[in-house]
Length: 194
Image: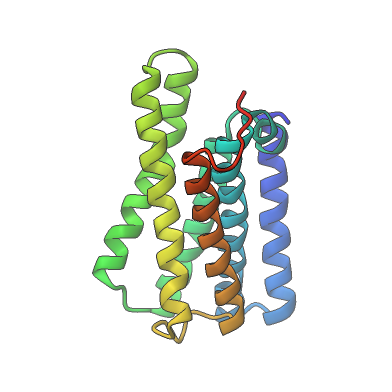
């Protein structure tokens, strides 16, 4: 798939997510919270494709998200960030500094990785350095998704929106991702690389 087509599909998916949230919750603060929540789920789907297919089949990843998967994810999660900041501002929610710092660092990685990937593709970055950057990126962003759902399952974020079983399923999915990744690292799951 071309990068342009992947970007267009992401924009359409984000629009659909917003329309679905507005349809269910109206033009309200709750509707904006739902839009933000659904957009975060879309980002998790995109990240999951990257996390899984970078290990198992890079060709398949290119067919899903183009040869620039980090760019596509940065666009989707950038939209989520705009929605999140808008919701936090309008709802006047108190921010937790440690969560804010961890999330900020994740966004730095998310927005810098497309540049790193471009440098690698154009052979301006050594493969060893690129693989190190890719590994740090993947595991840190995975950790942030994990830490997004764990406190929700524990009931520590009662105003997060959504329901308990939704959070349980999402946390289980995130845990399955790391399990598959670690098994592949120890060559317990066969890989196919491009």
